[in-house]
Image (cartoon, rainbow, N blue to C red; front, top):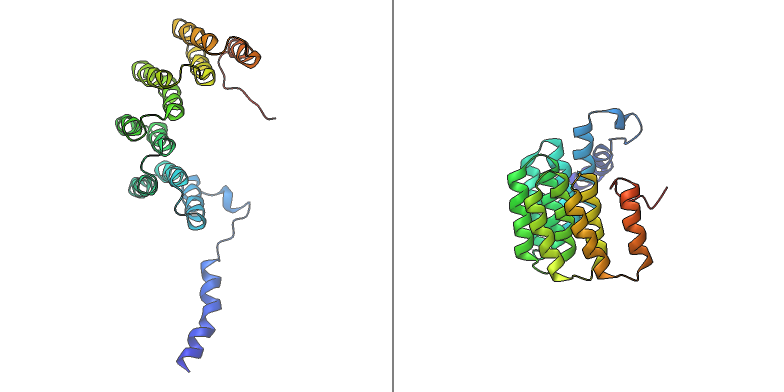
Length: 207
C-alpha cells in the first residue's frame, strides 16, 4: 500500500519541479534571477563541459552569487585544467564583472596552464586593452605573437582593438606585424582596411 502511495505521488512531484513556466512574462522579471535560473537550467542539461561551466559561472557572478560562480569556475578547471579557453572565459568573467585582481590572476593561470595557447592569450590581450590595462595587454599579446608570428588574424584583431582605443602607435606596430605575417593574403589587407574604416569596432559577419 505504501509503495502504491509513493508511486501515485511521483507525477505530483514531477509537476511541482516543472511548474515554472518560462514564458514572455517570466522574462520581464528580475534580470539577476533570470540569469541565475537559466544558468541552472543549462547546467542541468550539460554539467561537465569546462567552457560552459566557465560561462555558467559568469552568469552567476553577474547575478551576484560569487560563491556559486567560484564553484562553477573550479568545476570547469577540474574538468579540463589545461584548456586555455576555459581559463580565458573565467578571466573574462571576472574582468567583465569588475573583479580586476581576480581577472589578472586568472589570466596568469591561463598562461601557466596552457603556455602554447596563443588564441586565448590574444583574446585576453584584447579584453585587457579594451579595459584600460595596456601594459598587461601588450605583455600577453607579445607572448601570443612569439608562439606564431605568422598568425595574422590575431595580429589584426589586436590592431583593431588598438584603433578603437585610440592607440595609434600601437596599432601601427601590430598592423606592420599583420602585413609581415601574410603579405599576399587579400583578406588580411581587407581586414586592416575595415579596421580603420570601422574605427576599430569589431567586425560584423552576420546580419
